[in-house]
Amino acid sequence: MARSYSSAWISDTRTACSDGVRQIDHTGNLRPGALDSSCSLFLPSPAMSSEEADRRTRQQRLLPVPIIPIVLFLLAPFAIFLLTSSDLQLPQLPRVRIEYDRRDAAPSTAPPTPERTSPPPPVPIADSDEERWVGPPPRQLTDPPYTLGAAVSDYDARRGRWLRANPGFPAFVSPGRPRVLVVTGSPPRRCGNAGGDHVLLRAFKNKADYCRVHGFDVFYSNAVLDAELSGFWTKLPILRALMLAHPETEFLWWADSDAVFTDMLFEPPWGKYAAHNLVIPGWHDKVYGAKSWLGINAGSFIIRNCQWSLDLLDAWARMGPRGPVRDAYGKVLGEALSDRPSYEADDQSALVYLLVTERGRWGHRTFLESSYSLHGYWVEIVDRYEEMRRRGRDYRAAGPGGERWPLVTHFVGCKPCGGQYASYDAEACRRGMERALNFADDQILRLYGFEHESLNTTAVRRVRNDTGGPLDADDEEVGRLLHPAFRAGRPR
Image (tube, rainbow, N blue to C red; front, side):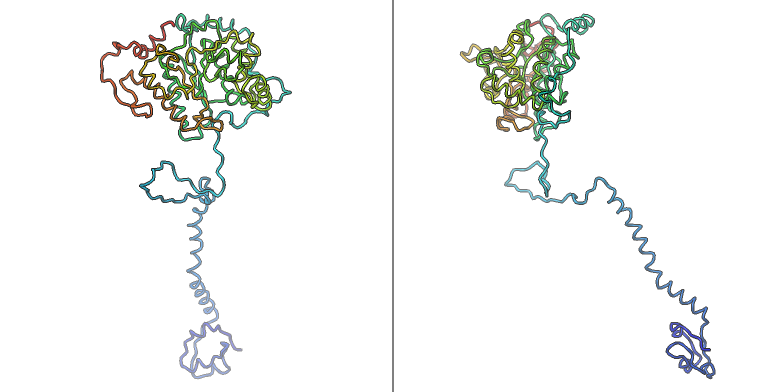
């Protein structure tokens, strides 16, 4: 019986003579009589052929088999990093942007704006009035009236007992000199423009300087204590909370963030207000005669810490809740007051409304101050600082229209932090605020021998080289500013 051999092994078969090869046909089978040939033929056994085939097959497949797992092993960590990294977003990888220096153009300090495929998100408005609503649904007209908190009764007697029990915290630091807390603030969010936060910082530094000179305390708030009272109304819950928390304070002085103290020496004549609980810049004829909502300004006022003031704040705040209540009272104010459109209720118009409609309750304890600038309109002031400096602090003798330096320069209609209700050009407001802040700052810097090169720059220069005893200062005003502890102990 003929045996069958693989053709792969037939090609490697070695025969004893050439005739032996011809004894194998094309199928690998021995031809009949091949083994009888005189030529001897050596053929591998079937077992040897199988082992040799397996060895050659492994050699042919040995090279590509280990490459695949090695490549996968190397690439797997990088793939896992790409899939699990939360900071890397492939569609938003930064793009390199090359800008060549143009000598004929003004240098730009702002970083290049990345390309966008969709409109940018809106910049959050910095005004408190535009803060995102985070409280309950807006109060409706059918809901109970808004209150600042639990009713407080018999406050004057309770405060008096506390003051007697704590003699170390008197409400008057000396006869005729009340303890005063200056209160100011700004919105919780950062400003929507580049320079707004810097202006707010300088404005607060201005108030801190004034308080240090006169021995006043200062409180700065950047929180909305009640979401219902946003925007201009934010001051009311702040004042109430501070009254109850600081019974040792006799007067609280509210100053808007855009109000700048520009006479660092002048102090309100406290004895003049002994019979009054609210001191606010205003004019009698405009409030009670014309019923004008511009008859006062609520950006700078002084209020006594007493039961009457707590009641006023409660009555005042009822018109301020955001939503339908504020809108409805806006219409009421528009009808009751002259030259006021019927937009939503604001705190200033609401206070005028209370004084006009309930004069017997509120008017007799309110002092409308117009003898000095507790609120000075900035448009009429900022370009006259050099003239004021030449004439001195009190130039009333110069003729009709003469007046003291403005105690407060108020930038009404400006929005240092940005916003949609600005009434004046932003550049004009920025320039005016810089001049006002420099004018006030010079009064402090001169104590140490420096002043600004001009009111239009922040650069300073030395104006005095003396290094001797400051206690011997000839200028009485400088001496009073330099030693606020002595100043604070003097009665007014």
